[in-house]
Image (cartoon, rainbow, N blue to C red; front, side):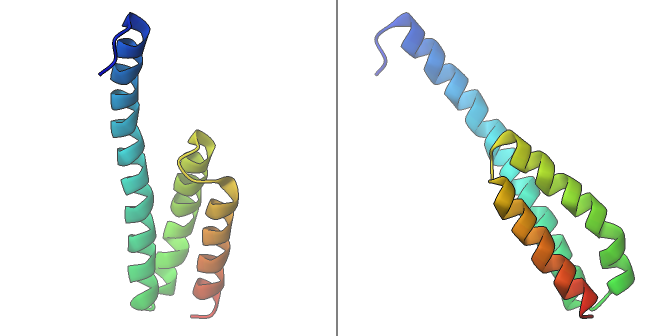
Length: 86
């Protein structure tokens, strides 16, 4: 248990930030799942329409440090290749 005033404040801050990070990470995972389902359906038109939204979502999450920028770029690159091969 934290026994200094600053440590107690820090644990409150960490708890709040953890909930924010979890919600952002779930948004990231849900966006990827949606795109993968569109690719499985072979719906190229829908997938191309959703691609800019997915890219924006991934880069905003990478900017906050939930995932690394390289991870977001790799995901977008792989998904773009899959869409183009449909």
